[in-house]
Image (cartoon, rainbow, N blue to C red; front, side):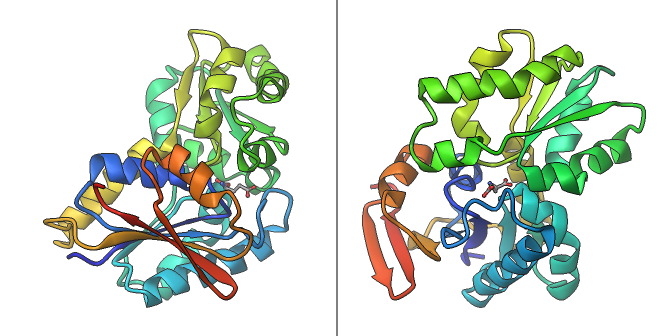
Length: 274
Ligand code: DGL
């Protein structure tokens, strides 16, 4: 029960999901893996992403994760089914299906816009997921290759982020989208810039919220929800870690207090509640 929840992403983006887990399930402990050796995933071949995602899932399960959240849309798009087949006893969740579900509930029959990485757009995962809920709804996708590097560089609140957001959002507004899915876990950190580009009257969907509701449901159904927080969250990074603790603390909304380097990987340990 007190085993951790494994969460991973290419970099800082998955902290938007980790943040939601900490808010909604404060008794749960997290092991977070940032694949900073390979960030950004966005322009990489989908087969390569699938390999990374399966390797990281194994890593988290080997370290005792009782459930894994692929807090990365590309990984969810290409590796979720395979991971569920390989580890049938561990609940594994993605973010695409929950995001699509909320958007369909919100859109009132109007087109749904998806801001995502090039890889997620290519995978058509959101179009398929929306179609499974309602196949009459039009999905308009926009690849946003400049977004992840801006977030990773700590420039989410910059004028550049606002200008880039205007360019990416404009085609979705022109297509009549009243709902826009943040189809990459880095994008909730750009929400202010994106909302300044959409203006009022557009619903922005962050799939993290629904994903964590589903996680809570699965943990309860399986009887593996934690009854009390024990230990500390662990943050691993496969490559570059400079700025991870500082930016990560800001994104997580809680300080990452200690950073421990382990050869190729770095572990950041946060003491819960302190
Ligand atoms: N944050 C990830 C996603 O949700 C990957 C972003 C990237 O590295 O390009 O797709």
